[in-house]
Image (cartoon, rainbow, N blue to C red; front, side, top):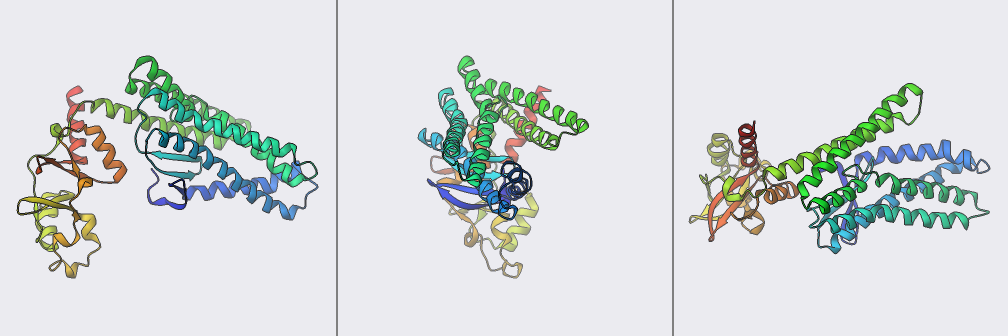
Amino acid sequence: MFGGSSWQIAKIGGIPVRLHVSWFIIFGLITWSLATQYFPVVAPELPKATNWLRAVVAALLLFLSVTAHELSHSFVARRYKIPIASITLFIFGGVSQIKKEPPSPKVEFNMAIAGPLSSFLIALIFFLLLKASDGYPGLKAIAFYLMQVNLILGIFNLIPGFPMDGGRVLRAALWKKSGDYISATRKASKTGQAIAVVFMFFGIFSLFTGYHGSLWLLLIGWFLYTAAQSSYQQATLRETLNEVKVRDVMTKEIVTVNEYTPLSELFEGYFLKYGYGGFPVVADEKAVGMISLREIRGIPKERWNYVKAKDVMQPFDESLTASGNEDVYKIFERMIQEDRGRFLVMEGGRLAGLITRSGIARYLQIKEEVKG
């Protein structure tokens, strides 16, 4: 989702925590707002020069609260053996990169509700700190701010707009009622899009009334709409690929590369000739690896006559393979998660085919044309 625009800053419980570049924008805006508008109003007796320090502390504690919110989702997911790739903090808060969908409505509900509950718990902690901070106006102002924000964060996330937490709770309820995960996802996504439109409508309306938060309403509405639309498309894709197996989509006419093929010949005689993004590498008619343009880009062209395919290929292992009996949708998810364009389809220890992103896209296009 965020690609190369984020950086890992920590690892908590084995889960990488990353910062997206947009986080710095919102961190700066929140710090500026607290230092110039919030603290001078709620604690005017405090020295103005130190408000910036308090603002930085409050902003950092806010993002620690957001991280705790996302960690609660992640820890519940791991309890059900659902792997977590990372947590990324960005301009609208945070998101947990969950590698697969929950197996049941109960798991979906528990994962979703954990976030808002953690925000309410954090709000309670800061409420208690607020009550204990009489005589310390700076600490009291920070505690009051974080109590409010975490309370709002918990309530906001309960709005039934998928893919927000409330939307996932809604999907869990629809899923349990109908027993149909795909239908529940589509209905929850449509609800999310409708709620996003309401946000954008009020954002546009507030532009004409002079409300200072109109831009945020528009941005939040746009973000929710695109996220819900993406979830809807994903549900439609899953429905289209439902019960379709790898062997139904794989390419059986495979172009292979000998392990001793020089990169110069590989580039001219394979990549340019066939237009494929990668090729299986073979030795004695057995697959020994995979090679794509990614592997040869870092090799200087003057060495292409001397460097062989076997020198730069991805060596053969289970991570490069798929079974003909596997669901295409699960393989497609693996392609996205692992950033791979193709897998070797192995049957009985031999190379039986190749499944690629372009092959899946072509299959979907044909299905759509036939449906139309």
